[in-house]
Image (cartoon, rainbow, N blue to C red):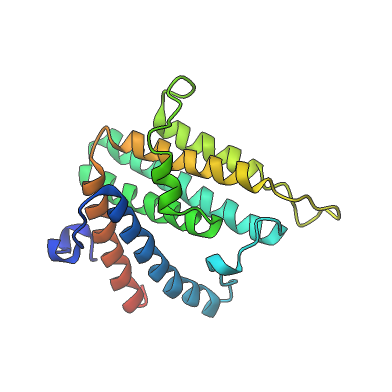
Length: 205
């Protein structure tokens, strides 16, 4: 089975700074989304793309919550690998978590510029465990999505609050990961894993 260790470094695009690297990641994730959502639609699931998502619709909110859970699950797997001392598996799970977090950003209308604008505003006096903080802010963001399929009365989402909390989850994730690697290394790991995902898409994995 192909993994990140099988991907050559020449598959990683050059980036001169974190902002450019983040933009490259967002663009690649959008490309992956196009293919994955086509596959999901073929398998009988609804296709979701950023331009079709409404933060106010109950069914769309469920999709956003599913994506937040995917981030949480991959973070748990990354921490398990870290505890076990399996560095390769740790980095692969980190890359998976970031794939889903970037996809959540895309679906939520959060851009690289939004994140970079707040990159120095992490409230360290509130949360000290940054990995838990990632989940904490994701949970608070998802709590802004109040509509449920079984409710007849629906509520408008406080979109500014929601997106602010999604951004905070990004800052928490990046702060936590900075204990292990810098953003250029995350950029490399992300693109290596994205190449693995492209291979799996092409091989009908």
